[in-house]
Length: 83
Image 1 (tube, rainbow, N blue to C red):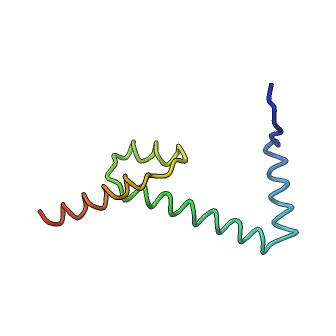
Image 2: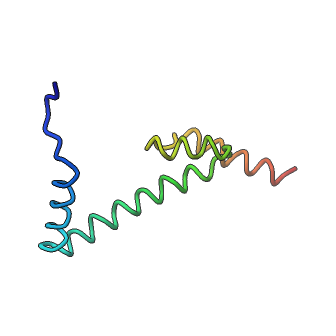
């Protein structure tokens, strides 16, 4: 038994289309904010030395890389330049 309401996909799409037509500026702001955040998240994963399979898994998991992962990736990149 589910304890919370989950709109069906068609209701979600209907709400999105309604927002898009009734409030185009708000829709554009929300959409662009989401795109920017997702782009930043994916670019952060690309900074870390992962195999293709690991990268796909991390991106699909909707996780964000930790600050430690980003720090070690940056240090590792600098160390490779020294060698």
